[in-house]
Amino acid sequence: MRLGNVEIFVVSDGFVRMDGGGMFGVVPRILWEKMLAPDEFNRVKTALNCLIIVTRDKTILVDTGLGAKLTAKQERNFARKGGAKLLTNMARIGFLPHDIDLVINTHLHADHAGGNTYRVGQDILPTFPNAEYWIQRQEFLDAAFPNERTKATYAPDNFIPLERVCMLNGDSQITEEVRTIITPGHTRAHQAVIIESKGEKALFLGDVAGRTIYLEHLAWVPAYDIEPMVSIETKRHIREWAYEENMLLVFQHDAVMTLGRLHKNGKEFKVERVATDL
Image (tube, rainbow, N blue to C red):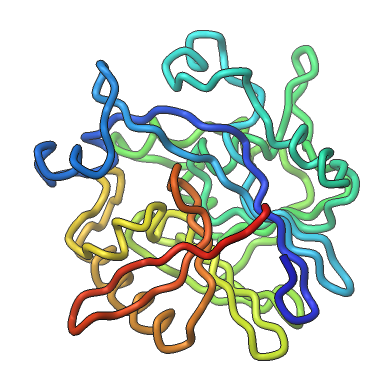
């Protein structure tokens, strides 16, 4: 899809199943299961969408999915059929690992940064050998020194072995058309990615709102968000801004709708699908 002078490609690392309680926090199952039916293990289908952005100067990959380092047991727990798919799906649209100039991690949770690296015997190597990895400094520190609540969501092999890392300190201009903004709540230094070119705007939300329902219902916050009240206020700001700017929204975990735009009826917001061949 073209956005002004920029091309964007949604690329999937496959689909997994994640615990419904984790996905919807304090929202009762009787409410959320009407919109997203769980399986017999209370898991809901979850997309692992990443984004390739091609500008005049750089080819950028936003997030890298779960990657290929999971054990057989972990793959079964996630119910991801066929293992990692990011590189295969990239190749199908003409991109190889060495084509990527920059990797932007929205944050370092395993389902967003697992594909940063891969295993060769006992060695852990960067998946994208020519890329510099752009990560918020605070996020890197929180991942490297987790607490009792967060340690299960971070895997050091996904980021510690990286040698070419650009540590960001807040909102950052990446290229002329691409920038990141801090969107806290899910993690303290979570960042979303904005693409702007020739008056057109797109927003890769990451885990600010991984599913459309999280934008439509501000109080619906995953249990994984470390600061849920901050998440609500971040979503409130993002929702108003995205609506006013008619932004194209890219949803990372929604298994039904990948691209959408916000519409408003009175005080109610609704995400409507944007047709795409991606």
